[in-house]
Length: 378
Ligand SMILES: Cc1ncc(COP(=O)(O)O)c(C=O)c1O
Image 1 (cartoon, rainbow, N blue to C red):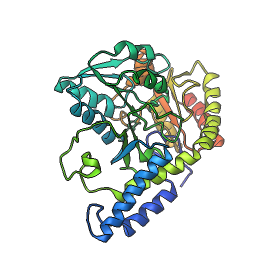
Image 2 (image 1 turned 90 degrees about the vertical axis):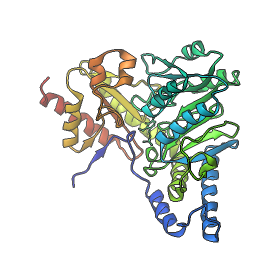
Image 3 (image 1 turned 120 degrees about the horizontal axis):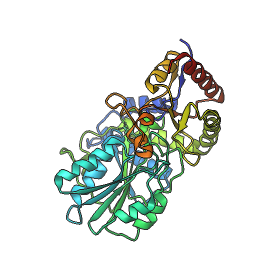
Image 4 (image 1 turned 120 degrees about the vertical axis):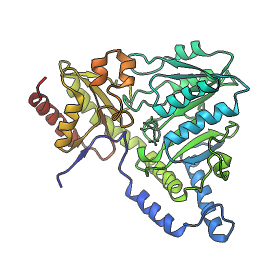
């Protein structure tokens, strides 16, 4: 089979071989249910707790709890709905922004049915939320601010540290951050974030693994009824092998974070140099201060879906819209929120890197893009 160049790592990433080994070993050696009180069950329960502790150690957190979930979608639903249902007597106003992943935005909009008011802040032309807009939106009824750390389409980084500092002076308000595209990739201080979420498959862990991490004093209500596993917040038989593999993938990616960042910044710089040299063909939607893992651009005079398919036919895998949108929507709501231009929002291409990509692969991508743009009629 011809070599495939995989540049869609923000959609999902290839599993670390070490993580797969652990998964296999744990499913055979630790197959008992951690809720069983016999010795084998207790052996599983100990590994589950060790995995939680390992995650907190890796992230240097000590006043937090880890709730294992099936991924970032479930974790975001639990964080948002669980927090709102448990705290609705304290207020009924939520602040978020137009760039959020549907698992956040739609969870928040659902809360309108339960009497919550929602402020959806705009994005600026760099794809981030303005701190002054957040401050302006706060009111006496606000109990939750939910802002993603890194945007999954553009790689833009929201000013969470600054916003967290400001929210410290509002004891009733908690800050939730979707960190699915940030964890193990870009340094985001976690001290002022009350609840955050991530998924294993974005960090070379397994699909179906993820977590919500929250400060111990944050009260949540379960959104699914059941046997009360995971601190009574996520019922269902514990997914021990997935949970342990998440802890391992996180440890590995955090250990590699600095080296990966430097390597990927070189790939990003090469691609940006090319895109910037051709303003007649491309409009960049990612900016230098954004993280290097994601480069998003719009095609000025070609259809993105046609170009993505042509690249795929040449064994180069990239996205047009992010994976969660591509089937049902015809344009990127995030790019539209940044530029209010439907043509640009409908013709975006997202390149997302991993540590395995090389400069040669970026050169091959560029050469093929050039070729395809010549080949395809306007
Ligand atoms: C920012 C962000 N949040 C949430 C998700 C959903 O993650 P999962 O697929 O693990 O549910 C994704 C995945 O695309 C994402 O990029």
